Amino acid sequence: MRATSEGGADLVQLLTPEGERVTHPDFDIDLTAAQLRDLYRDMVLVRRFDREGNALQRQGQLGIWVPLLGQEAAQIGAGRALRSGDMAFPSYREHGVAWCRGLDPTELLGIFRGTDHGSWDPLSTGFHLYTIVIGNQALNAAGYAMGQKFDGKVGDDDGEATMVFFGDGATSQGDVHEAMVWGSVYDAPLVLFCQNNQWAISEPLERQTRVPLYQRAAGYGFPGIRVDGNDVLASLAVSKWALDECRHGNGPVLIEAFTYRMDAHTTTDDPTRYRLSDELEAWKLKDPIERLRVHLVREHDADQAFFDEVQAESDELAARFREFCFSMPEPDPGRIFSEVYADPSPAVTAQRDELLGYLDGFAEQPAAAQGGVH
Ligand SMILES: Cc1ncc(C[n+]2csc(CCOP(=O)(O)OP(=O)(O)O)c2C)c(N)n1
Image (cartoon, rainbow, N blue to C red; front, side):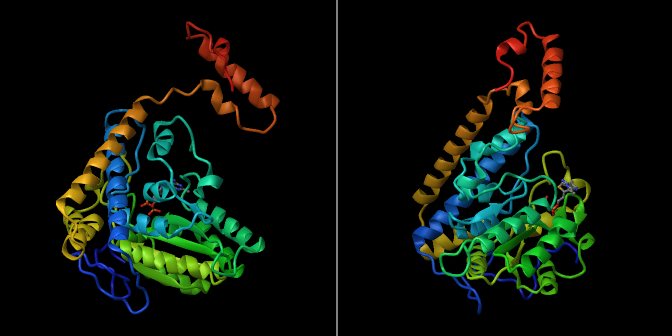
C-alpha cells in the first residue's frame, strides 16, 4: 500500500479532477446550481481561515495549527450530510466539519492558542470537542451510537446517527478496532469516516496496512466504501447514504475518503524531510476546490462576480478570525483548577493555592487578590 494518488477501481467519484460530472452505478446525488455554489463557498471559506491559522502560528499568535489543506471536500461532504440531531466526533483536523456544524471558526482558536480545551458545547452543536489522543474518539463515538440505539432513536427516516472522524494512522490504534467491534455487534448507527490522507505525520500508508483500508470493514461484517475524498459531491453522496443506512438500523458503515494532506502534519512538522515533491504535485492536480470551480463555470454559468463575492467574503472571515485571535484574553491562571470536579476537592484547592501563591511572588498585583478562581 504505497502512498499513491490513484484510488483504484473501487473509488466512488462523481466529479473528476477535470471538473467533469460522471455517474456511478451505486451512488448519485442531484444538486441544484445553488447547492453546488454553497458547497464551493464552504470549501473556499474553510480553506481561507485554515490558511490564516497557519499564518497566525507563524507570527507567534498560536502555539500550533493543524492544517486541513486538501481535505476540504472530504470534510464538507461529510459535514453537510449530517443532520442537526446527529452527533459528530472529530479528531483535531476537522475544521471543515466544525464549520458545517455551525461553529464559528473563532471558537477553534482557543485550543491552538492554549487558552482552553475547546470552548463549544458538544451537545448543542452536535460536535464533540477535538480529540488529540489518536483514535480515542472512535470509542466515544461507538458508545454514543450504542446509546442512540438503546434509546430507540434508530429505525426509520427520522433516525439519528453518529459519525466519527479519524485518519489512516488511527486505523492502527486498538481503540479504532474496538470501536468497530462494539459498533458492529450492537448494530450501532455509526459511520466511521476515515480520511486517508496518505500520511500519519512521517509514516506512509504502507506502514499501516497491507490491504486498502475500506476492505477492513468486511472483517467486522459491515460495508466499507472508498470515496474520492477530493470530490465533494461523492463525499456528500456516500456520507448521506451511510448515515441513512445507520438511521434505519443498518449500521455501522466504514467510509475511506481517499485524499491527501497537502500541507505539513502540523505547523511543527517539515514534510520535505520525508516525502517527495512530485507526490505533492500529482495531488495538486486533484485539488477539491478547483474541480468544482471548473464544473460551476462550464455547467452552471458561474461568472466572475460569483467567485469575486466568495473571495471577498473569505477575506472578511480571515480578517475577523485574525482580529479575534489578537483580542483573546489571557486565561486566569487559577482557571485550570476550577472545573476539575463538580464539588471542591481539598487536593485541587491546595494545588491551586500553591500555584497562585508562587505566581504572587512575581506579580506586582497578587494573583489571589485579582479574584483567582472562577
Ligand atoms: C495515542 C497517540 N499516539 C500518538 C500520538 C502522536 N500523534 C499525533 S498525530 C499522529 C499521527 C496521526 O495520523 P493519522 O491518524 O493518519 O491522522 P492525520 O494527522 O494524518 O489526520 C500521531 C502519531 C497521539 N496524539 N496519540
